[in-house]
Image (tube, rainbow, N blue to C red; front, top):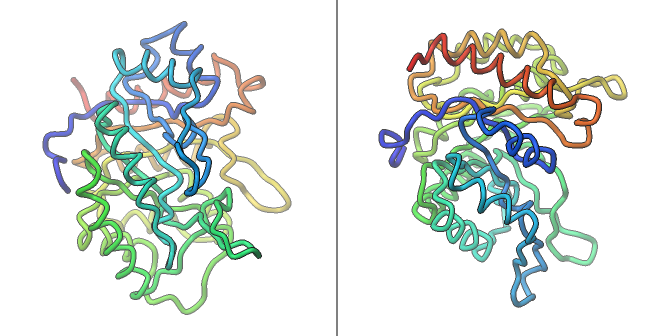
Length: 298
């Protein structure tokens, strides 16, 4: 895990969305760091366009304000590292430029693919993270992609366990074994999304604690926590409010067992903010900080 030893423990952060700038302007002490999704700060006009990436001025103003006040980490959604045939060098170069500009402490993306081929034959973003089967050939492909990617980003690279609303039959291994092998063979670290794990355990009826007992928790650098809700007979990772109590229990469970953990990030979707409110967000961050402080005292 390149530069991991030199990466400081940050504490408790929040994933940026349009509701966050006002929250932090009113209370800068609310978080220890901010996680940003670079893809949300520009318009991607497509591979044939010049310039391809056009920055959104109002969003950039927040980032330029935040970089002098908070440590920043990057959480992208466009690498599509699970795509079998798709590779976007220009997108990776854009991320590399942003690393030089904003000095992200680490960079994460999802163990999934997002690029799909349309009826016209063009690649396009599906607007969702599509999970991968945990097979040896997929492991080899993703390992090679991450090995090639890591030298192009100026920080440790993390892979997030994905939420999956379907399951594949006859896989070569289970998810913890896949993640362990990927971290070992590619040199990446792990972003353990506890709400994704809770969602999958609830929908597919397995024991989340048993999952954690098989996972190499020494590879975990960041943890995500969030809330969700029921929809059409399924529990969803909607980031729609406070964390369920089982997610808090999982956080308590892993804190003593994650020696390389650098941060816990709370995620909420801005569309739910009017009913959640600033106080609701503050309560979640305060509770996360209390957990962090018990296991990571200054």
